[in-house]
Length: 71
Image (cartoon, rainbow, N blue to C red; front, side, top):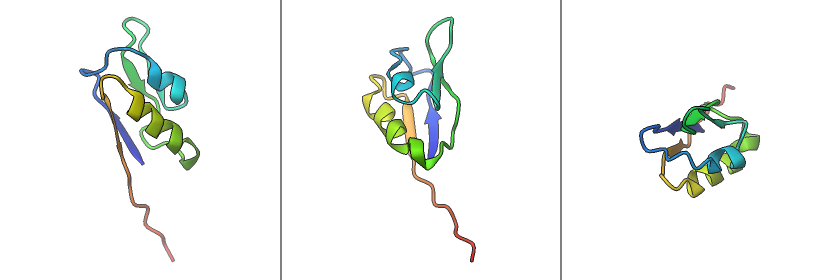
């Protein structure tokens, strides 16, 4: 999973931080989203998907990434 944010779209609602505080934070001065982990571990994927789904500004993009298996 790769997470990207668009700070220009962010309205500072903070719902992402409530859903996945290990991945998202907010700037103190204006509440705009900060990305803490662009490639969060699998244990956080559900929370990140929820954060993206409930973001009122659609400022969070989640892309699934393929991890190559080495044999």
